Structures are given as C-alpha cells and as structure tokens.
Length: 115
Length: 119
Image 1: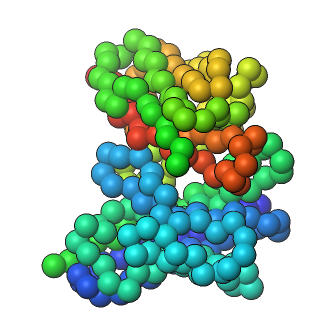
Image 2: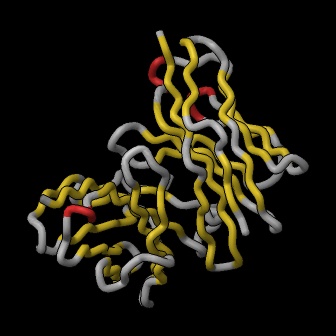
Image 3: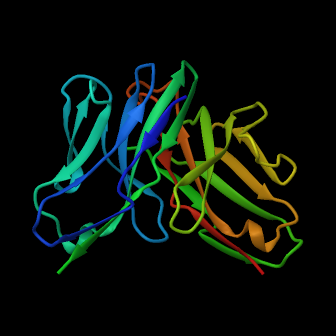
C-alpha cells in the first residue's frame, strides 16, 4: 500500500537559520510529488512539485526539494527561514491510474520560526 | 494558475439542520473534484471523489447518506452535510483537477476551505 511519512510533527528553528522538512513515501508505481503550505484557517497553497525531469525542484518563497528515488524521499529545504514561514507543511503523493488519481497526504509538519 | 473557490468560508448551524457547501473551479473545467475533511492540527482526510455527471466515490468509513456530494457541472460540486451534529464540526476543503487539460499532470487545486461549526 502507498503511504507518505513526515517524521517530524514539529520543527522549531530560529529566524535566518536553514531548515529541512522530511518526507518519505512508499509506492510501487511512479508518483508525482507535492509540497503544500497551510496557514491557519486557510486552504493549501502549492510550494512546489516534482513531475519528472530534474530531481531538484525550486518553488515559491525560496523553498526547494530534491526527489531521491533510491531513498524514496522528497525533503523540503530552505536556506534561511523567516518568521512568516511559520505554518503547517504537507507532503503529498499523487498516485493512481489514468483518470483515477488521488492524493495521499503526510501527517504534516508544523514549522515554527523563532525570533 | 487554476483557481478554486468555496462558499461559504464559515458557517454556524444548529444541530439537526443541513448545510450545503459549494466548490467552484473558476477558470477551468474540473472533470474531478475531491472533498476533504481536516480536524484541528491534523492532516487532510479524503472523504470522496466526484466526477462530473456520475455518482461520487466515497472513502471507507464515510457515510454516504450523511455527506451528500453532487457534481452537476464541470465547474461546480456541492457537499451537503445532512442532519448535522456537533461531531460534524470541522474544516472542509475541496479540490479540483482536470484530466483533459494539458499540463495539469493530475495536480489538485485547492479551495480556501469552509469552517463548519454545529451548535
């Protein structure tokens, strides 16, 4: 069965420090990978996505992620965080066959940026 | 980009009443829409998948008669919570995608969510 694991439920980090949010998935088929950010009482905003091609993906707000097929990982990184990056981050995998794709979400990681 | 709206953003209702939430794709035709439920500080739980013109496919454990989903057009899906009770209070999020639009790559586009509070 396919699954997505976000090992860290909370990650505190000081402002201007680097951060890595981890995401591992299990799937026997090709997947599309996504990172979303959610601010309180809001919907999900796409940060970046891996569909194919280059394994290093750059997204909005200075975030990037690297797809590692051998380790089945898609970790999210930012070299220098801001207070405004405090939010919930979700990793998602889109799986399925033609016409019936679904997302599997990780449990989320709460990033708290400290002043 | 692709924009999805939800209405209302917040709703408070009395126990026993029914509440309808609308999800609209504003700039594309959504062949498939999804409904999620999110509990506080939790991840999104997929409730059902709906394809335009056909019955919704519900996830295991989701009551079909409780959560009625209608996808009557390529731009509108509705979720009706029937005879709502306090335990139905939650954050409901819809998403939409199009298998026919090149470049969407099975990506889902999310609405802003609806906060339902049942008193």
